[in-house]
Amino acid sequence: MIESHLLRRHTKNPILTAAAFPVPVNSVFNAGVVKFKDQYVLLTRVEDLGGSSFLWTARSEDGFNFKPDPQPALLPAQDGIFALLEDCSLEDPRITPLDGSFYITYVGFSSYDCISFVARTDDFKTFERVAVLGLPENKDVVLFPEKIGGRYAKLDRPMTQTSQRGDMWISFSPDLVYWGDPHPVMRPRSRKWDCQKIGAGSPPIKTPQGWLVIYHGVRPTSSGSIYRLGAVLLDLERPWQVLGRADQAILSPIAPEDFQGNVSNVVFTCGAILEDSGELKVYYGAADQVICLASASLVDIIDLCLAENRDRVQCLGGAT
Image 1 (tube, rainbow, N blue to C red):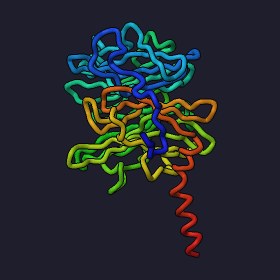
Image 2: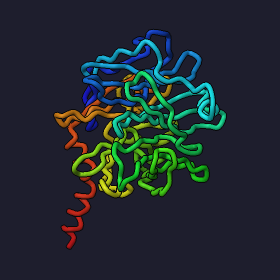
Image 3: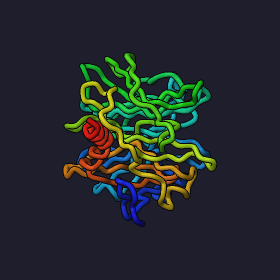
Image 4: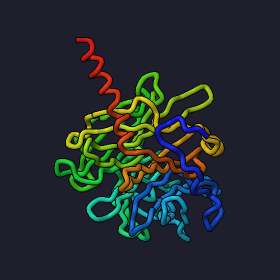
């Protein structure tokens, strides 16, 4: 297949399927990823045969060949406020190394709709729930890997019932429990590939040029919504300010596995790994069915984010 996007698909996609698990499951997709003790660790969303989702860890020595653990990592809580708000399903985990631990943001479903949560682990064997991160409907929460101005920071995507539009926001916290000081960060772009709603995919990656976030954008069509991936660069000290946003999608559903699954026309990421070589590996769910991998040079992604601003400056310079 000739790749037409900046992210290049791994030649052996999909890299993880339902067949790899020790019990029958329907699908595996939308995984957070991190390096831990010389291994690549995926915290995957697994959908069982009854239609509910939970989180399951898979590990790899090379970042391509993953083996799931014998048992799930995180199942819906059995008591307390968490049991009330996530009794139906756990979905779409993101992993952020922070303060010497790993914090996992995820979505829980219940009769109260979708709500975001944060949990913590030191070893990907035991997990501690930390807090409910907000009111419904709010998804696509990612934590920054360090404090900004002495406070924790998160990106999220509240949905407005009036417009049914999903914008990306940032807010801050002294303790990862109580959040405030919200700022809008960016919104869907009219008549473009991300015109309906957007949401952070990977936790922000710190670069000298700014915070890089790989995000998803949705565009409705007559046959259903299309999910694509894009990239945005945020200011290091004022991350509600966009320094550059790629005009074009960096990955779109064009491979067979992007259509053959539970939800056709979907590529959706929850995590990426920046290698020492400068290669950015983006792990993504395809068609809500399998996990795939695509990669590109970090320099090329940042250049694409800044290209529109650079072209605008050149145009203004040429007009004077």
